[in-house]
Length: 142
Image (cartoon, one colour):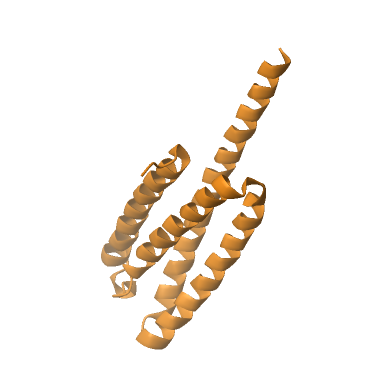
């Protein structure tokens, strides 16, 4: 099974981000703010990692089979991510019923961190793509 360079880079970046942010967040909540640490904390990094894997699989498939629909898929995945996040938050609050505020605030911090990371990754991907296209056009003209 072959894996594209973009998919591999995203998965590596996602794994490193999940490990760093997950362990740092756990350290901060466990040692600096122990009264706010909650047992459901590990579910947050796992949620964002799994959704990131789903996200890159969708983008890779779209890039192969429908490259002109990439922007539409990007927006659809962002909406889907927000809806699943809301569902995840509600489910946790209904099922666990304790440490709701700490869970929600931690989840929001993770959401923002991953949103910024994904935005920079896909922005750099699009910039490289445009640069390659421009370079190819310049070579064709010359």
